[in-house]
Amino acid sequence: MAKPLGPTGEFFRRRDEWRKHPMLSNQLRHATPGLGIALVAFGIYLVGEQVYDKLYKPHPPTSCSSH
Image (cartoon, helix red, strand yellow):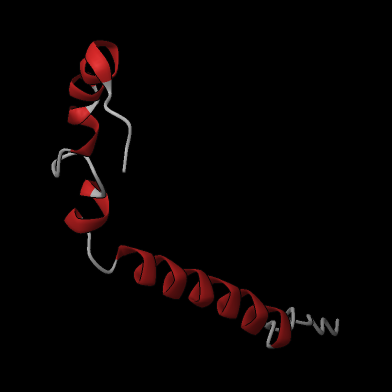
């Protein structure tokens, strides 16, 4: 069994109860569901676009000036 806390331990236990309040724990994660997946998908899109641009870079126009 656990040892009784005593007056000092009880004082600090009550002082730390606010840290376990539901409004403070994982609030941002629950407020923005799917944000992590969306950021990963957007990152993959950006990388894919860079790779596509490197592979299929438009050729610079060649000017054939015949005078």
